[in-house]
Image (cartoon, rainbow, N blue to C red):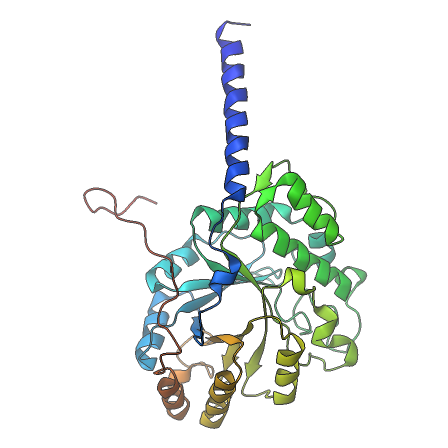
Length: 362
């Protein structure tokens, strides 16, 4: 062994120790708290879904005469999304990231709720935690939404109301959601993270990391109002992970399936949480009465703090509100209220250009 080798080993050990100490400190540094992601006072964050084309965000904003504060992107479990981050930065809108376990190419299930609960997906959850922490980017994370919609691969029940498999039982969904919540939030040394997992009825972290930094994220739980199929064992309450592991409660609400009783029931049941409607739309034609009623509902329910329009894809889509002038007019008028700020604090901003103004090489 040369004289340089012991020196390199010593330097490596010191570097590893310094990195571990730094991570421990960072894990305890207070990033923007999850509570800060709730708009202040009587404000409501209005947003729109991300189609993958930045021009659609701009056209939507122009049609409504209001810049949406939020942008919702739908991504597949395990995938990286640098192009999505660029769109968030271009839009200057706080992200709402929906995560599905359906493969983007053929729709097969990538990982089951039971596998997530057991830690098989920890690597991906750690990446999410570190991404939002490193970028200091406040964001809402909406994992495995609509767990009581039979068409979702992670749903417990198929469209006949039968259990999909043992790995999809509601208890595994709830435990998977808890694990997602704990790891994506982060904020603590390894033993602290494992203690939280143990209290949630989950196995320890499947990683050798010394800890996780505290990411500026807020986690949204959003089942369908009554379930699809609408059977007792598919009600939202069967899938609630528990208040300790939910930052926002909410639901989706479309004009072709208006169950106002179920909407009110869901709002009242989870009265301790800010309420979100992360998907809503006029879905089968011009329906200004629906838009007016929903905007009135939001105004009268003080915990309703997030409202995100789903615009689907393509200019001919029935979800595109620009195709329905009466609905567009009602929404445009409602958004004139100062209750709907055009920007959320600390929205994503594009990095400064390099010296000389040249774009960085990809």
